[in-house]
Image 1: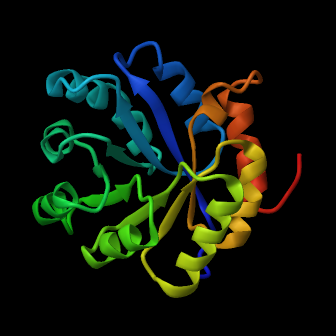
Image 2: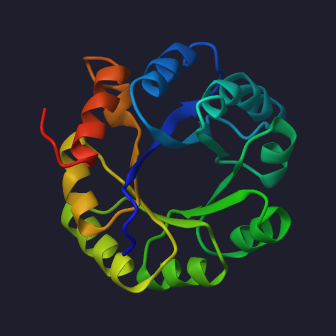
Image 3: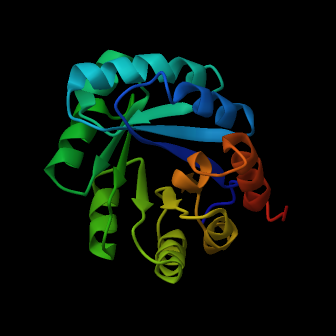
Length: 203
């Protein structure tokens, strides 16, 4: 485990259009320190994906936020993103690393097993992301990874209450998505609370 303070990693809902989501994103980005933004898409049309990235990325990048896309490497290159987020540890990840690394970030998500995580690390992914496990399983997986490996670990927190336990387990970045965008208080309040919980504070 490294001694760098954990940071926030936001992920958008799957988007079909940028305009309706932009105000919520701007509120979230203005509310606290965000390390990375993952832009996700509702469909596979690359032209549409590129348009969404071009509309949303500059506001994030102007704040020093690394913008990643859950799409083909070509989308990241053409639309001016900072990297890609690839599902799994197979050929798609290897191809993305070959095409983009080290100039661009290549992260590995949908990591289901320890073997998959180690494979992603061996391929030189810039981070591995754990999600889709219950809280206790995530805590165990993060603690295992942080103890043995140097590749940064991103872990998805389903709720704001999950943030602190995952940080204590050794997460380098905590991903939030619906917990921010669906918060009845608005995304700014959710991000502010997440920041406090990253630091071990309670609100």
